[in-house]
Length: 194
Image 1: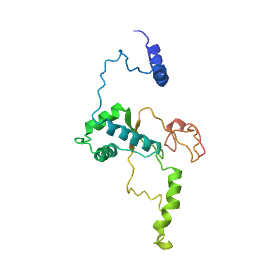
Image 2: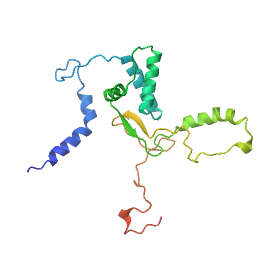
Image 3: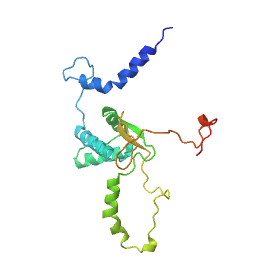
Image 4: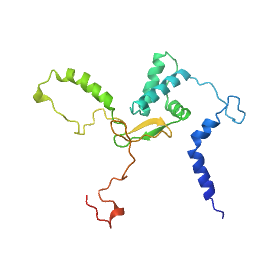
């Protein structure tokens, strides 16, 4: 039985270099190597606007669920007065596949609100809301765990798109420790002063 480590190493290197390879060898319109037949999409205008919606929400770190995507597609079709568009689950699934979108789990505060949006809200909206209340009736309950209008646990994003945590200034640091245990089993024989 022959050793297959060289093949696995080559495959990993090729996957890492995928973006560079695609940049160096772009697909030509008259390329005869592909056997796929590209047809004009039936709801191309809806798809383009919907993709802009997804990308804009990803830039603003706003999570999007499949239901949000479907509802937005229906709204776009209604605005454009397109007849016969149902926004079926199959259409949404194929839209995601065509545009290389996948469901990504959000971890921790990865999709937390931006500081700019929070400052804007506090400066412009909070004073108008609290002016009709007495000071005795105003409480700070930011860590009470209320689930009113909770955000989805997953969002849609382009496959391979990475997000890393950072501080409010945008500086990112490599993780020092990855784990969630107070006393990891790996340190059972090590005395730690925590």
